[in-house]
Each structure stands twice: as structure tokens, then as C-alpha cells.
Image (cartoon, rainbow, N blue to C red; front, side, top):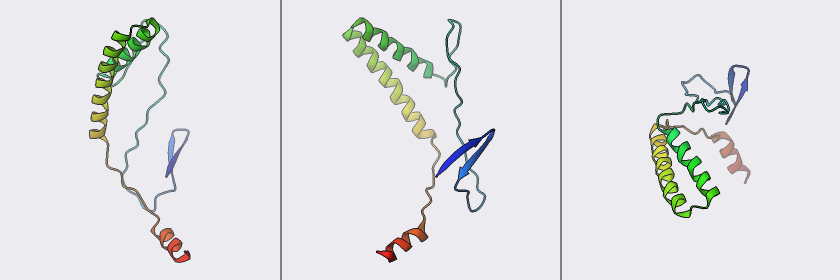
Length: 109
């Protein structure tokens, strides 16, 4: 149902009734990019999305509607490509149900 972080330990709540393997995905806090030489270290190709998104913001500032439309199409194409890749990589998740609680609710109705 949830998790918490305590120092370098990841806690899962409620605790499982038995041990089983699991995968924990963690995204750390990125450092701010402030100097010209700072690098964006992302997954291969994701920096291209950042570039197109920044370009769109500049074009909006300059009121260049035709260029905004073209840049938005390219950024959205990249985003759709990433979304497709993420859907393929997503591990299957098993949802747990409180069957006893469901039976108790039915008898109380």
C-alpha cells in the first residue's frame, strides 16, 4: 500500500506476510544545472526531449506560432516514443485484496 524511507532503508507498509522478491525503482534528486558546462545525464535520447521542450519555451516567448507547432509535434513524438518504451519495460504488478474484509462487509449489509 505504501513505503517510507528511513536513512538508507526502504520500508514497505503494511509488512508482507511472507518473503517474496520485489523490484524497487528509485529516482534520486538531480543536481541543478547552473553552469554552461553542466551535463544532463539522462536515459539515452531523453536529453533530446529536454532540448525540444526548451526550444518551445523560447518560441512561445518570441511568439513564433508556426515554429511552435512544428517543435511541439517533434517533442510529442519523442514523448510518445518514451511512453511506449516505458509501457514495455514495466514489470507486472500483483494487487492484493483483503478478502476477509470483503466477506465481513457483505455479511454486515
